[in-house]
Structure formats: structure tokens, C-alpha cells
Amino acid sequence: MTSSAKHAGLRRADSRSSQPVTMSEWMKKSPLEWQDYVYKEVRVVASEKKEYKGWLVTTDPVSANIVLVTFLEDGSLSVTGVMGHSVQTVEVVSEGDHKVREKLMRLFTSVDCEGYSPEDLEKRKNSLKKWLEKNHIPVTEQGDAPRTLCVAGVLTVDPPYAPENCSSSNEIILSRIRDLIQGHLSASQ
Image (cartoon, rainbow, N blue to C red; front, side):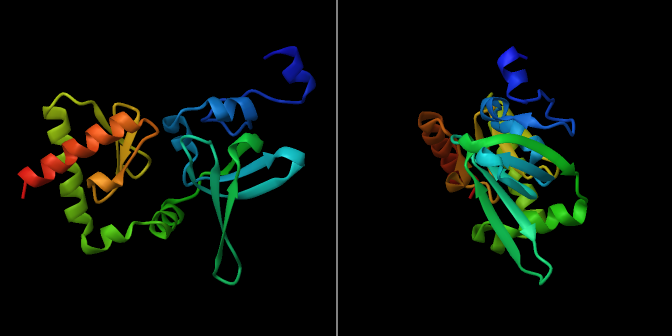
């Protein structure tokens, strides 16, 4: 840690610990590292000492913006976005349990998934994963409840695993993988 960081009161931390992560560290993390915070209750301190607390649902891979959800007493919820450039620290407050994770996952589930049973989605995911592996494209499952496929560490495919469910900051890779998935879906029908 540099002496200037010490004077600014910033602390270094590992993503798996409950220690805070500083602004420069947060912005430098990869999407796979941010995934360690998803579905966990966090405390985010932003510029001007503004503090936010909630369940981290996602982090934008380009801007490092954070989306937090807070469940309110009246049964409703509050969604807050924290601009990535203003993040000073992110600290895990609670790991949460399976029920909280399921509730958070259902909040933003794609309408595209409504026509599929969990078994159908699992079959689609496994079929696409095997096909990508057969074609020598590196693919892994991502997250605590592995629903998302991660292709070559730079692209994600969410349920129901169609071309429009791909996400990447690299437009060239995004276009090529979308075309490949479309070809796979056409061939398997």
C-alpha cells in the first residue's frame, strides 16, 4: 500500500474477506471478482461519505456501477444504483442464506425464462456448455447458484441461454458468440 493511500485512510482487502475494498481496488476488479459480492449484503461508502447498505445484485462490467436491493418493512423493496467512480469502500456485512439468494434472483429474472421449467433451463445450459466445449471454447459456470455461463472469462450467458442473453464489454467477441449460439440453437431444433 502506498503512503498516500495510508494517509487517505484507505485499507487494502481481499475480496473473500469482510474487510472493505477501496475505490481503486473496486474499479480494477474483474467481473468474475465482483461475482464474489453478488447476493451478499454489503455496505458501500461512496464519495462525500455517503453510505449505502443493501443486497448487491449486480455490478456493471464497464462502469463498475453497483446495484443494491433493500427489502423494506412494508414488503416492498428499494433499488439503489451507486456510480462505480464514486465507490470508496465495499464491505460484506452478511453472506445471506439460500432463501435470500432465490428471492434476489427472481427479482430480475428475464421474462424470456417464464416459459421454461428449471429442468428445461438446466438442459439448455448443459447443451450449450457441452457444445461450446466440443468446439474448444472455454466455458465455466459462474456464481453460487451456477445459472450463468462464462465464456473465455469475458462474456456471460444468462438463462434461457439464447443469443440475446449474452453480455460482454467486448463487442467483437459478443457478436461472434451470439452468432455461434444462434447456429447451435438452429442446429438443435
